[in-house]
Amino acid sequence: MTEPDPETARKSLLLGWGIFALFLLLFGGSFAVALLYLALD
Picture 1 (cartoon, rainbow, N blue to C red):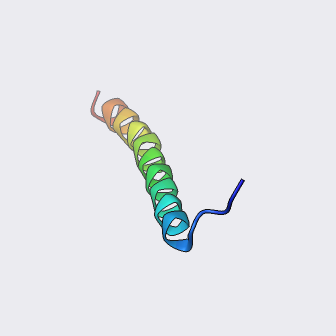
Picture 2: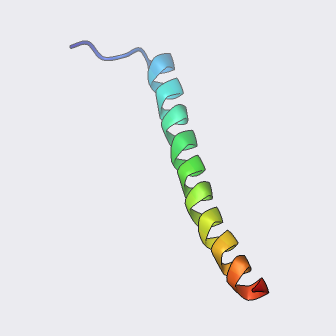
């Protein structure tokens, strides 16, 4: 198994952090929508 070149590693790391940020946004957003729904009910 060979190590990826620095450029590929950097792109993969950025993609990973991007997916993680998207997950956090969706996770937090679902709570925000639920609380808003309860507050306006």
